[in-house]
Image (tube, rainbow, N blue to C red):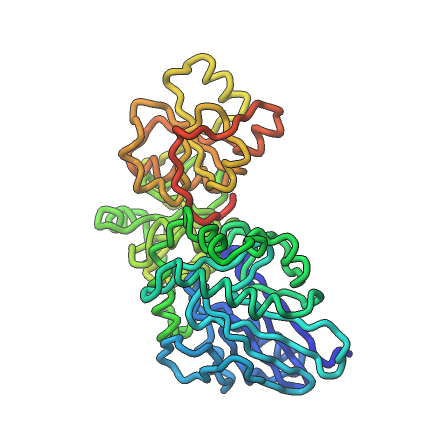
Length: 477
């Protein structure tokens, strides 16, 4: 039996990894998600008592469960100095140790992503020859490093300079076989080129991470700050909430079921219907004016970026179970203004005799034929990200990343038939719902997106300078 055991928990919808370390009946949780029952259940199964909750920094892309977890277990919360946290916590200093059982945790001050960022080096005292493990938070990812633009007091260049020193003077001084365990994976908004791999080593990152290969501090700073992706607006709100400490999820109100007439009335008063069903179900029939964000992808982060944290929302889901899941995921990013759900879903809407809307779907072969027949009428809208389109586009595409679409609608010619695509179809379905809600009638979704185009062996071209692209952090779909 291991003297020190590490459990990894991964939320695909937020690309967020948290960890639990247990030894001799005691446990520490690092970077917990908002819904904390998963840690309590694991601790009960393993016979551990959670005594320590460690935040590698004040998170901005999700709401943390650190306060609820501490309240329910009596654990102490640990944060780096300068966090501004308003709840009771231990402000750890560089080099401090936390030990329990056979576990030794050493805190490293690694400012750069945020001022208070820390990394945590784990050693198993019962196996002194075993390579160390380091929990790197948002300082070092597999294939990337943290974004340096989350401080209101420091410029991105200042933070990037701090990050360079933290990486080279702290993390890269660890042995090459040290295992790297970051807080995020591919698709997170906290970096640009993260790998889908769950872990790596210091040695592999030293050789392959593009940011660590920068030959000087100045080139590193330029690399990180040139064309820096726009920071999602909700980041500042989530960071403030995490500094105060979020309320327990049990305090969220139960969602009322709303009749179709009630939903229509609330829509007219400013509420937005969020349809969480699979893309094809939404395409065939949906409530007019609704926004489609399927639960199968990075639902919560896209909802926060597109709808904000304060808009009154009504969920149109497949069944009550999916509605509850939707409410939970929204709460993970701080969206709590959910006023109810459509009773009996689309079936309830139909029974009331209300109008439905739909989004036409085109295969790549149908699109090719249509563009050959009406080349002047067809406009292709690519809603992928900069890193993706750099690998090729369909000829004559208009490229607007999904996160920028709502603010770019006035640039689009409403006389065109817009065929929308992304990588595989998730984001393009969201995009078509935004267009339809804004009054665009001539739109269609390209089934399978760019992946289907390439699979069919159809030609692509390199992006040309006249195509304007605003880069935002990726949420692949």
